Image 1 (cartoon, rainbow, N blue to C red):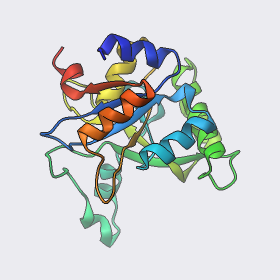
Image 2 (image 1 turned 120 degrees about the vertical axis):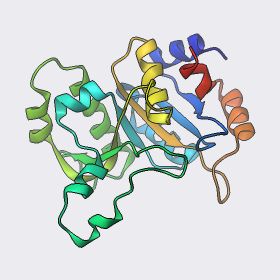
Image 3 (image 1 turned 90 degrees about the vertical axis):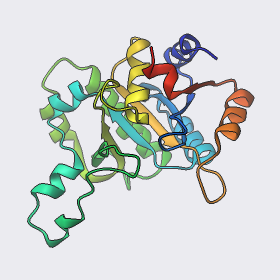
Image 4 (image 1 turned 45 degrees about the horizontal axis):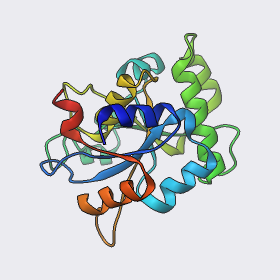
Length: 214
């Protein structure tokens, strides 16, 4: 399916599968816009994908929230474990991870309902033109069960964080995307199996190059 089809599916509340590339992680992520993170769609990510459910935010939104990269927190720490700081992954990129959060109105934070509440409220903040940092500080706490990711821009990095945010931008949606790695027995789901899953469920299947080469 084309990028245009993926954009339409995303705008209509659907999911898409994005495979980053053989030269990178070699992984496919099941993705959707954060405003559509209902409990039943969180369950689909959990059951069908099986990886870590994360919320990717654009750099502009992250700046408004004053979100740090987790590697920067470690680098600034005086704790003995600060030496564990991971500057780059095996494929050469700095991690996109920021802090993990829960909304204050959740119970444990891990259930489908709880993660839906945390993510959809974050999506609302992403579209708010007001003082979202104050609202964020008032309504959320860390550590939690939804890991936030910060995009560095498709021109700087070709990770799933940037790929999903680029697709949201092209679809005219806010920079808040939910993504979850698709896992197979003992390792990442293969590109072929991820494509079959997408075809079976009528989800668009894209490769990273479809987004960063245009």
